Length: 434
Image (tube, rainbow, N blue to C red; front, top):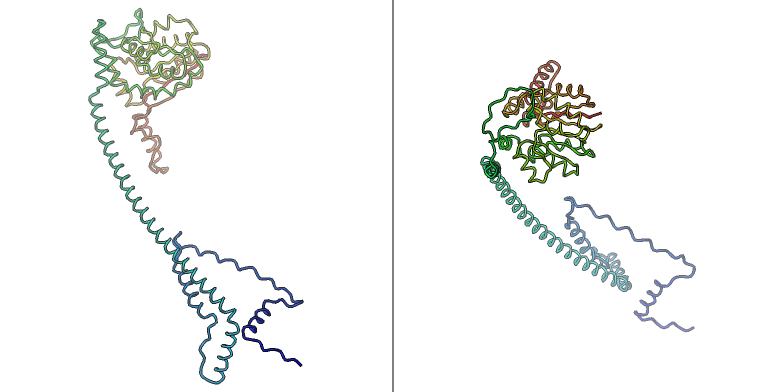
């Protein structure tokens, strides 16, 4: 019987490797389970900064456990423990082919984790530095913005003071006054007096002050308000004249409403007996005739106007001429055409005491119900009264204080008094020719 040759140590280890790697016939193949899902990152407590200290702690734990792979733990002295230790040593020698690569793999993982930790910590330092730099730049920029805003407020305050000084000087009015004087010097004429809105052949006798050298056009420049302000106030009347031509503006003055009509493509003509007003309108390219408004209306054909507008005119007339104006407007308007008469509201105490009596050419305030009655009895229909211009800073639309039932009567009285004293300064009557 032949004896088997003795195997060397390296051959024994190779056979063990082959035995481990070889699949036995009929053995069931065990599938490798899928890797466990990676744990979800723990959300940072402060919203965006992740605590690298926890990662560092986990890395230190891995580093401390790596040397224990394949190591023989210490045991107490004794024959039994010595035999166990020797057995483990033999087994470790036999499995060195397996333990060695595992330890090398663990060392490589530890080194990779160390490099990863260094990269993360370096990135954290860079991010912190960038955030600090950005915060410093933002703070510096905010300081510059605050300084610029403060400077702008200072400039605005200075401009406000300068504007107030210019308003006090009334440079624009003085320049226009000088222009008017030069024009009158070039074209000598009788001194300008307050304009009369009555025809020369009128048989109506009214109390009138003796003629005097009174520059009524310049007076309007001072107290009527700027042209831009008047245009803004009168813009609300445009909708009634859309598609209706021609529109007549009686007593057009500086031509603010004519400008609005022209800007919206509505053919319009103005009438005024002030040469200064007519000259100013002609400079603006507006179509205006210099004549008495009653003469203009009487000379015009019946039902030839697409609409008639007269702002702050009717209060210059005695009651007989007021009624005559309403009748003439009815005759000259086409069917379906509007008539708008704007005037001072006598139901507002401040407007009556200041606005009406400030102008020496005003004859009689017109109550809105009187004007409504005159229009309705002349044949107009759909007569509406629209109030405008409450006293800024003084008019109270509704009470801002709490009111119980016992105080309601007092509150109503206060609100009525406020409306009477500081209510709407103007009103317009809008009527339609049927």
